[in-house]
Image 1 (cartoon, helix red, strand yellow):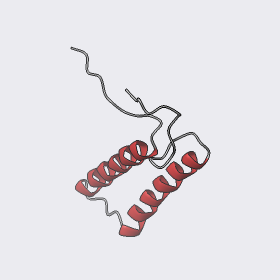
Image 2: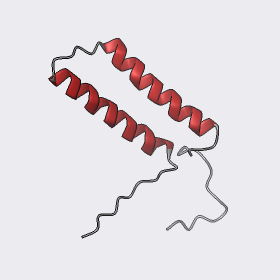
Image 3: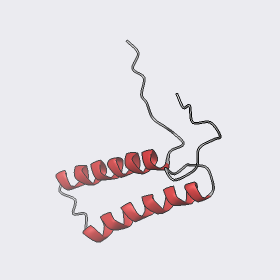
Length: 76
């Protein structure tokens, strides 16, 4: 059985969501192990993720949901 994931690797939203979920999971694991993660540290991590995704979107590497699509609208 082959599992096929539907992940739009050019989408800024998809990358932002994935990286935020990974960061949240990592912070949760650290907290579960007794490591104190301050709110300011978590905010810095999330801000860095947002800044990185925004930079890649600005450079045209990722696409935002507000970007215009190509000439025809028949996406499959």
